[in-house]
Amino acid sequence: MFRKFISYYKPHRVLFFFDMLASLLVSAAGLFYPIITRRMINVWAPEGNIRYLVIFGAILLGLYIIRMFLKYFIQYYGHMIGVRMQSDMRQEMFLKLEKLPYTYYDNHETGKIMSRMTNDLQNVSELAHHGPETIFISGIMLIGSFIYLWLIDWRLTLIIFGCVPFLILISVIMRKRMRNAFMESRKSIAVINANLESSISGIRVTKAFTNDEEEAKKFAEGNQQYVEARRKSYKAMGQFGASTSFVTDVFNVAILVAGGVAIAFWGLSDGDYTAFIVSIGLFLSPVQMLIGFVEQLEEGATGFRRFLEIMDEEEEQENPDAKDLVVTNGEIIFENVKFQYNDSQSIINDISFKIESGKKIALVGPSGGGKTTICHLIPRFYVINEGRILIDGQDLTNVTLRSLRQNIGIVQQDVFLFNGTIGENIRYGKLDATEEEVITAAKRANIHDYVMSLPNGYDTQIGERGVKLSGGQKQRLSIARVFLKNPAILILDEATSSLDNTTEIYIQSALDELCVGRTTLVVAHRLSTIKNADEIMVVLNGKISERGTHDELMALGGTYEKLYSLQFKQPTITYLNQEIGDLVQ
Image 1 (cartoon, rainbow, N blue to C red):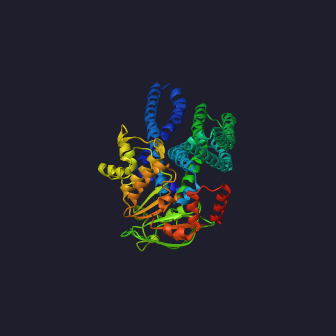
Image 2: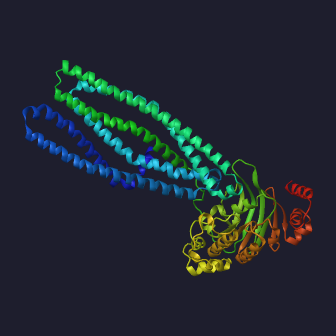
Image 3: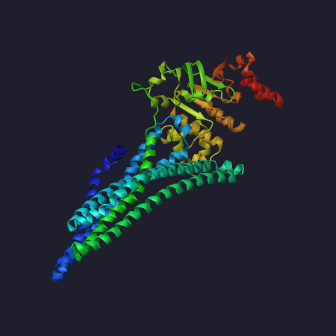
């Protein structure tokens, strides 16, 4: 972990070098005060040498002026090193998150991920800045003060430095306790962020169900966990600080007693004793800096450890010899495909089917049967356990993910729009699209007239997740986005199931045009929307139980016929429950 952390200094090594050089000069300047003090008291003051007193006083003042500018350099540019390293890590983490598979996001909450990218990396930034400076400055001052103290009186020096092992012992004992406490604190902050992100995103649902008290209760629980975690960390910090402070206080007692003995029996002069006292301050200052640094080290190390946990996650797998997918017809073939999430029960059980070029195939069946999962397997959002999926004869495990997904357009029930303008969201389907192309896509999606009725047209801000738009308007924007992408293969995952009948007519018209000339896979609960599909497949418990045209399946009198009848009849509740139960079995 240490070697990995050091590697982030490499792009900033020039600035880091000057930062360390400035730290060295600051440390060296600090050592001049006791040296000059000793000479003033022992030599120049008794001799009445006012000229030397003034000259070296002025030299000392000049050194402190230079030291002031050096400290400014360290504070400003040292922090900038930390910020730039933090920026590098954040960028690296974001790129890593973009490469992680769907399964990672199935198991990790957004708020907790955000906590690692913000709170944790902020602590890493502080460590990156203060860590090397503290160690370097403290090391120089400790070595310098030790040498100077030894030259004054080696016996007093041995007495003082005899306290150092106790400081080291306390640091070793307390560090593990602090590390565990800070890790628990980081996790509790992540829980708060996750709860906050969830509550803010679902604020409309909360208000609709008047469950603000319940949300406040859940947040209070997470907040209390944070308070308890911080209590433990502050307790560990308090024990560490109190113990180390006691040892430094012992320093003062030891030097007081030993100094008296030295003056009385070893012939130590008043000037040497005064210089020794001043130099002890130089010695204690870096010791206290190192003591305080232990807390910062644990905070930063914990944050960096959590950063590495994400960086060590396994990315989406791609064959090293993968080639770009070349779509000529758009034919899709499933051959004995099996899939399950981790160690759970199989979701897809030995499915085989073929979608010919330009055909429209519909997947229907009760919820949880595996329809959406089949759709997610085509762009390889999830990796199958057995079997093969081919597009125009090319095994999807042997093609690059980028080229595969560039050839697939997806319109889902839950439309995600980015915080920005209408034009920016449509252009997401083709980032280099011209304004004319954006307008053409909007017209084909039946959204252009609405956009032009707005004061700012395509520059209208839609708010977070498109909060300022209706469900139908969001859906039409997502369709325009796919029109602009112009993929060879189209997946419609319950694209109209949440819309009212009037809006559905507009959306369905746009979808019908979108499907022209493309191989299309449709997941639908409203069976009226897929009556004209080239083939309909009924998915039950991860298997295809029936397949054929609408008329063929109705004539078969099986699951599809029952599902269709349920939507266009008004059976009694008892009959409805019985029919649904029969379908699931």
